[in-house]
Image (cartoon, rainbow, N blue to C red; front, side, top):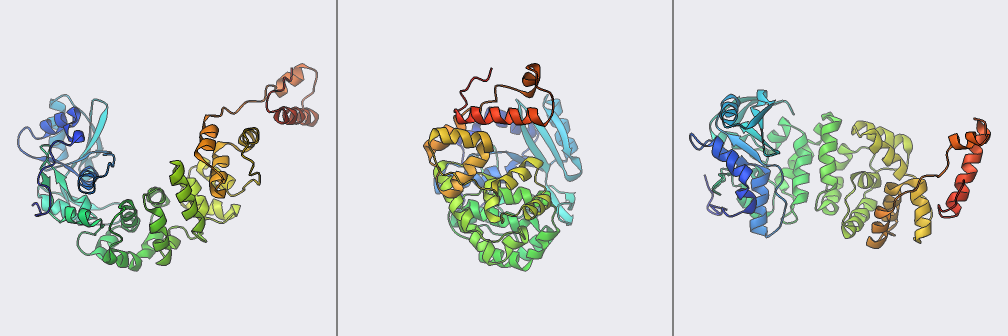
Length: 397
């Protein structure tokens, strides 16, 4: 199964020696070698080793030759909690020492219909590998560090390329979301470039994006906008018409490129801020885009507020305190970033600043003889303006 250019064993990796993971894999493999780590954790570990990077190893997924029922029985016998998260598709979740691990039975696709593929369980690692999207995601790892690479995924890691398994057009036809995933994974590789065959297939099938659910598009587009090489990948996606399929309201990307570069210097990544840079300052258009992407109410409101920049460029602390009070931290940070006025020192100050509360309320004014109504509201507003003008230090009692 191993290609000649694959490091046959990566034993000694710190994450692979985690006691919880070792315990889980030992239980799953107590009868025979039936379970291996698969997907992102293996991909990122090999990328780190070959390119000498330090990508954090995130969720660890496990593939198994056993049915979910048998895995459940083995785990529960060992006292490990099992959650039946997706039995129909062969997935259970093992919870051990406060950590969750998804365990999925090897599968082959019987038929595909986007997100809801009809699958059949198998005990063939090769068949399971061939149903996956990209070669870099079809890598398997034994707990002793042995790497299994049935489809040349490590070769593509060495090239820094994202390559579809089999015919790219057919893989996309099975699920149009793979178009976004192709560009997202390509953008997270800061080496290599975009695979030409994969890109051409994405262009040919790009109309499928419009048929995807807003939630699925949003989740992938968020990851893409926050990806490592977003300033390189977005112009490519715009030039070939993919970006317009994802975000029909998009008008230009120059502001996004500047914004992302400035955020990088500040150690920041703001999805709504970057999305705002792609949209016109038109409330109705923004609401339409937010609705299609199924943004939360808070995200939608932020997107609207980001479209109304304030004109004050003064970075003195007294001025910053006022604008943060009036507009909120998110809006101030976004606008200063977009204007190219934000530095690390100012960002730290805004982050640490505790927004004060007006030290008097309508109820207190009523206790002093004011009657509820317009005049009370006007008086409260007048006192607030005095308080703000005096740098939030005026005693109103």
